[in-house]
Structures are given as C-alpha cells and as structure tokens.
Length: 419
Ligand code: HGY
Ligand code: MN
Ligand code: MN
Image (cartoon, rainbow, N blue to C red; front, side):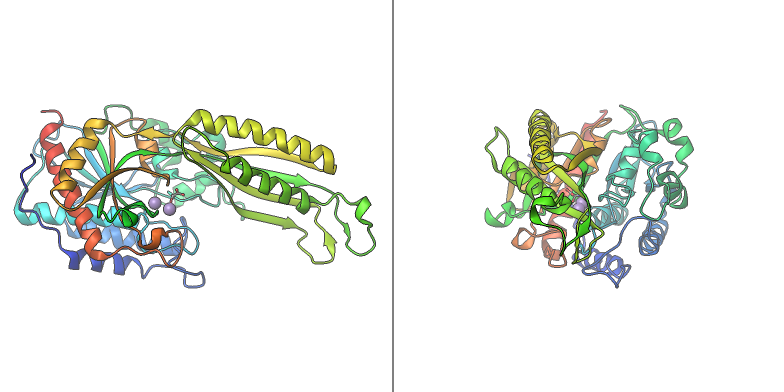
C-alpha cells in the first residue's frame, strides 16, 4: 500500500492560479476563450512563464513552441518526468479544460519545495501548444511537434488569414525548422502524467471524485466539400437545382446514423463547423464546407466508418448531382494506458478520494506523447458532464484532490522508474 506523503496541495493557490489565468481571454467571445496563437494566449503564457520563473525553474520554448519549465533532479542522468497539459481553449470554452493540468504542475513544484523533496528525475512542467483544433485544422500541434509527428504538409497549412503554421510556431517561440533535430524519441521521457477534467458525466453519475484513465480515443478529422450550383432562389424551379446545402444536410444526417449504429466499442461522430457559400437568403447555396470528426478506442472501427460514409457520400452525390470531396485534416490514434501505470495512479487516487477507472472520450496530448513514453491521466469531475462551453465547471476542492493524487503518483513513479 502506498504511504501517504505529507504533501498537501493548497486549494487557495490552485484556485488563485486558475482565476488569474482566466483573466487572459478574448472578451469579445463567449465563455473563457483563449485561442492558440492569439494575443490572449501569449499573455496567458507570459503569466505562466513568470510563475515558473518565480519557482526557480529553467524556462524555455522547445522547437514546437511548447512552454517548458524544468526542475533538476538529484540524478540528472535520468530522463525527465513530464507533467502538463494545455492553456489554449476552444471558442466559448471554460476555465478548466487543460488549465488544471498545467496548474497542477506548478502546485507540484511548490509542494516539493515546501516539504524539501527533490525528485530523482528531472521534472518538466509543460504547456503544450495548441492542443485544441486550431485554425490550421490540426489539434495537439505542440505535442505532435515534440514527438516529430507534424508533417511538412501540416507545417505548410495556412489559417483563414493566410498565416502558415510554420510561421505561427516561430512567432510562438518555436524553431520549426529544427523540429526533427530536437524531436524526442522513445526513451527520452520517463513518463508523462496529466491531470484533466473528465469533460463527461461518468464521475459525477457514479459519485466518484477521481478517475484513472484506462485509454484515450483516437480522433479522425476530415474537411468535406459539397459543390452544387448557386442560383436565384426565386426563379429556379425545385427540379432544376443542385443545392449544396441540402446535399450537405443529407450527408450530415448520414454521419449521425452511422455513428448511432452499434459497434464493439463506443463511437461518436460530430460535425461542429460548417460554412455555406454565398450564405445569402435568396441564393441557392453553391458550396458547403464542413469539418467532421469521429472518435473511438478502436482504430479499425474508425477506418470502417469512413469507408461506409464515403460510399453514402457517393450515392448522395449521384442522386443530387453535386460533387463531394474529402480532405483528411488530422488523425490521432487510440491508446491504452499501461496497466502498471494505471495501478500506481489507482493506488494514489484511492488513498486520496473515491476512484473509478474509465476511458477518455476526449483527445489529449497524451495521444501524441504515448508514441515515445508511458503516459497516465487522472480525471476530476465535470459538473453536469459539460465542457467546451462557458458552463464548464469543476469544484476547486475536486481539482485539489486531483492535484494531491497527481503528486502522490509522481512521488511513487519517481522511486519506481529507473530504480
Ligand atoms: O476535443 C477534445 O477531445 C479535446 O478537448 N481537445
Ligand atoms: Mn478541449
Ligand atoms: Mn483538454
């Protein structure tokens, strides 16, 4: 059984960090919006950098522009333990998604310094750049970059204003031309641990305070373009239309029915972003572009869904006389958390609060880090199971329980790994 270390995190400090970071937001948008590569994002990172420096950490941006604070260990020949998450949000997002994982890293350092514990391993607290789907159509940009999983094609993608991703990474402090040179490989990281809100209803419904993550879904994202013929809404008979929006609408409902089918593992499919051109009430839409994503713990299911979906798209295109094309935006693969890693986290959580094991329906930087290192995640409850909205809320008491479990886990891993 794990012995409890006298390392109590401070709810007051954690609350203060979360509230301070919540001030750096785009107030023209709903919720607490801090989109990657914006001035609000940079202001939030400046604040974070200052907190790390105040704790005596060595602070740097890596080649992918991830913000990293480092604390040396007693044996710096050992590879680092990474604690982190992300400080960017979706548009209209909340105050907790990603943020609590970075704040947990700060609090871990404060507690270690207060009780005078130096870990054997070097410790890195990481704010991964642009974990959320960015304007470049790619998510987990920083963690992809850290593990050399950003293709040249991705780096040359442009946002709607014509900014190239490579340049955005450079402006955010990275050196994109040196990504492969500085990429981390298997064995370069001892462990990656992340505290995160569940963003779903399971913990709350099962009346548990902590979740040990057993796996993280893979996410496949596509941009779909439906091209018809725009024309006058009043003079064009219904039998002479090639309406891109009604075609897209049928395609959208098809995704819902495919995702609602029964599979060996849970599946979700969503279309959350859509453009209509020319988007005028008296013009038959000539072009519709939408982004879809499908998620599952089973990659074969994801691939099979896309095959079925594209066949449906061909039928709709044929019947409606529209042209439908698919562009792959990004793929992250599903991962299972190593059972030994789960066991250590489960013991640390169980001595802290009521605990349950569960998979993550949300994607995380852990999907990328798991390509080179063992990863683990701890969840805390989301009120009403909601996230990616202004109503996103987790009690500070629960966040503190999560930080406590994370600290306990780090102390055990620090002794167990490379011993
Ligand atoms: O979309 C997700 O799953 C995560 O919140 N970025
Ligand atoms: Mn998110
Ligand atoms: Mn997140």
